[in-house]
Length: 555
Picture 1: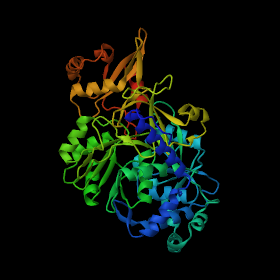
Picture 2: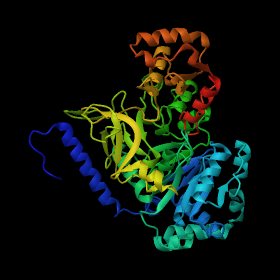
Picture 3: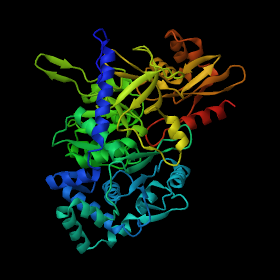
Picture 4: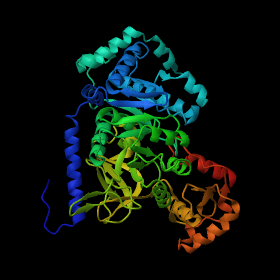
């Protein structure tokens, strides 16, 4: 890197080293293998090590999982013949994992449909990607009461499984065990040799603020995230991950490939809300790593026992803000403090993550800091800039967060204008307001889209939500702040909540005592009680539905 003057500040040195590391990571990405080739290599080196498991199927070895994916890819060659993007509608399960692996082995990209987004959300994904077929399960659709979107041909996984006889299974095992990687790709249907810059998957954003956007992630994008996280979390051969996040969730999809390319067994369960079964599986399979949203952790806090979570050594929370109250309550009950991570689908998805503290003789380095989402992962650079001028802000000040690294998406499928808006001189514009402290820890304060302009002042919804939860002494999400039109001030705050109405005056009184500006305090008539807060399948608040309900109630 370029030399720096002797009087440079330490934060400038850190920024320069970070950006140099990002440059090195991007240069290295071109020489990496595609993810499925890493999967083949790991499966052949450790053929008997556990790859996947689930209720009813307690163990699937690595070579067996490769053979299963090869056999599926060969069985799907005809229905997938003319497709580059293939739809998948399956819960987190061995079947869902093998279908996604099969798609990659055949040189195709998978589109995991968000079955919690209702039929319209799935129809939007199908329309944008042009997927003509969807691999799914009759029993899953019936159990989850899901209707397929119009215009797609279902490929029933049950029928595919029945069509695979002993000979085809034996051939799949032989190919998986000894076929050279290029021959294996050809036998699975890959017409040309897949490259690291090929699209691996299209993952649709949550759609909480508008129509979902299809994020194109390449092998290189996901691989960069995997390698960075493997440096942060030093894996052991005995580690096992609980796979409860759906495969249409960017972190759920990353976890699949993390497991496939490392000696990390994944225990699948299709319903993350089934806290009783989650606790049972963690104890039964000695799960050591749990990745979940704070909403799910709140459920486990109430319904799982400390003994069930005794094997956990890493609990990582993401997708929404982890409150201090929930983190402390979780630690007091289970003896392990959740670490907070931060990411975006466009970044494959990890940007920053908290890590376990490092201790050695005469040395201590904290890996996390309360109220922060950790430090940028290796190979990723961040900048805090003014939202209007895009000039860097003074260190410690809040501003718009920009991210650059080999994990940044290829773009939004079919939406070049949105891709251009999201990128600025090679930096991804997150839309989040953030700040960096003196040690490089990142704090996310709010979404740029979650501000209201009231009487000429910018009012952050996230800060109001935090103050409300503190006033109510709540450990879980009880409030959701939005804005509705106002003839006099342009907008005014509105709050959806699930508490007893009798508590609101007391909470408002405590809110005023916190020293918040008057504009940040919602009016008494702006509180709307609901049975439950609208939440997406990813565990995030459904901001569009929250605003719709508030506008309707206060109309």
